[in-house]
Image (cartoon, rainbow, N blue to C red; front, side):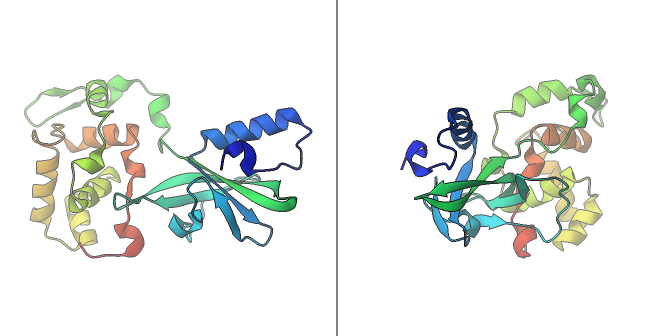
Length: 224
């Protein structure tokens, strides 16, 4: 069913409103319509999005209508969840009042990179070699990290992005510190990311939004 025919708006006579809402739907990652009783009716995935949506118990969001909340959607291919802004908009469907839920993926979690010069994030490795932040961002920006790392490696890297120490990562994952150190050295080394230094990895990863690829491990409390 096309977007144009899926939703019959109560404001159909207001052409500007109709066109704007259709544009919002087209630009969204997902959309879903539920009845006034919150029963699923239709979506662009043909499934009830709530089945793959996680709403954390801790809600740090401070906002107002129509932003409903920030939710997390579980990826069907990789073992991660990603944050989305969820908007709720009243509409009519088949002449009945309903709610349109629109999901927009959050692409970046940091703001300081927007205001600070890239040169400030350059680092130096243990051998005294300069590590150029902007160069590595451009080199890695087309890479999907989930395709080159195992689930275990991504767990370690994600905690590293949160600036956990080797011992803190080991305690969190209940692994030996030496195992964590070897994993970090391997994934930051020449065969994988070729970054060679933790601090520049953290800055590059956050700039590219990798920290928003949250391991589902933390949701389901699995064992490594």
